[in-house]
Amino acid sequence: MSSFIETEQKVLVNTRAGGVYIPPARLREMQQTITDKSSKEYQRITWEALKKSINGLINKVNTSNIKNIVFELFNENLIRGRGLFARSIMKAQSASLPFTPVYSASVAIINTKLPQIGELVLTRLIVQFRKAYRRNDKTTCLATTSFIAHLCNHLVAHEIVALQILVLLLEHPTSDSVEVAVGFMRECGAHLAEVSPKANNDVFDRFRTILHEANVDKRVQYMIEVLFQIRKDKYKDNPPIPSELDLVKEDDQITHHISIDDELDVEETLGVFNFDPDYLENEEKYKEIKSQILGEDSDDDDDGESGTDDSDDEDEDNESEEELAKKMEIHDNTNTNLITLRKTIYLTIKSSLDFEECCHKLMKLNIQEGQEMELCNMIIECCSQERTYEKFFGLTGERLAKINLVWAKSFEKCFVQYYETIHRYETNRLRNVSKYFGHLIASDAISWEVFSVIKLTEDSTTSSSRIFIKILFEELTGTLGIPKLKVRLNDEAMCHYFDGLFPKDNPRNTRFAINFFTSIELGQLTEGLREHLVNAQKLIATEKRKRVESDSSSDDSDDSSDSSDSSSSDSSD
Image 1 (tube, rainbow, N blue to C red):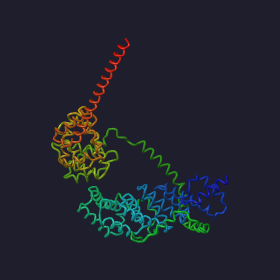
Image 2 (image 1 turned 120 degrees about the vertical axis):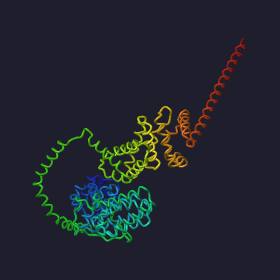
Image 3 (image 1 turned 60 degrees about the vertical axis):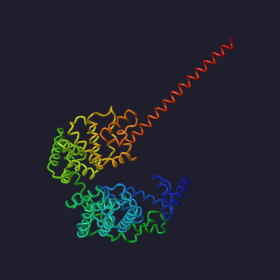
Image 4 (image 1 turned 135 degrees about the vertical axis):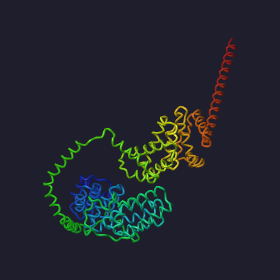
């Protein structure tokens, strides 16, 4: 057994990344077998234990337990494992962006006691941002800028870093760089407005210029408009630091003045095990630092412990009150709230002068998760009740679908729902609904994938559904033109969505589709179907010819065999 442990120790020491996985129990057993605590084997084992501990604590941190997790992190040798800490917290943040405020608050607390760790994290984030910006890696840019923005809010980073990033992103604007800049301003705009109002105004002037030039995607233009609305509302939904994470006094914080143009050393070797000849001495030094750090907080801990007994009774009372509240909660089974929401949406649409005002009012409504379909259905119903189709409704739906993907998915579900029940609508309502969806598809507000629900055959369509398809394609042709529509329908990435529109499974269905599009003066769209039908007829003719030839050859062989049998019988006689 001892020889096996020695073998594992050699593997662990001689590999750079730690070798194979060793269970914690085996790791403790190996640690106990080593008596010389200054040896390379012992240092390597403690290094692996430190790495696992830091990773585990960072993965567990959240708003409710951040104080306890930071306390446990200080119990680990963070000076020795600062490279591990920086790598682990950056990896965790990039994997779960909603927890960025929590991770930045953890770095801010540790930075007050060990500023070299906060400086290392900030340095690595800036270097990672520079690399991602050069590679046009938007995902990494969004993650790193979000982290840097929150570190600016906590005063770990100076506001000059935020302003330099914004200047870099907006100097030569592209859709991706402006999108990253908008996300960055949403996170730290409130902080910049407070500490550097003039520079903040200059940034928004630049955003306004980009919006007027309209050289970026429509989606990004809408994001800029939303950012201006957030600024107008004074960032009420985007506070610099949430109240539950405001754990550091402003006077205690240490701010690092690092520029994105500086030559920065990320100290990569800190994340790899290196033998320390003064290991025991450094461990004793960190114990003294730890006692100083945790000793300052001990009084607060004692006060908290003394207050726990008094608060137990209050917690029990609160729990009983919550249970009573749950029991007394009234469940609306009459759909009163839903009817009220529909009325509000209807009145909002009817009272709006233009589609922009309508979208602005609808976005302010308190629409809960799962009620998106109600809004989409109400817009379509209002559109269908008009005497003639009004483009106002199409522009409203287009704006909502391009602002948020949730609305786009909801409109796609509505397309399927209305197509399956289109036979219930009279001609005028059917026409308005068809033109509405034609506008959404032509403007790419919803995906062309919705065409996969249509099966254009004589058996699977009704007169109402054929009228719906006819008006839909007339709207698409009027908006895009036949050449662009043909390009879209022949696109290899989307052609499988149109298998039902242009069926090739059966010559009868193919002829029906060709005749349908020809009758609505869109026969140019069926060139591929016509070629397929000609080739299919040729294949059928060749197969029939082969079958006839094979039958005739078999008949000839039967006749020859009969004649040979008769001749043999004559000779025998």
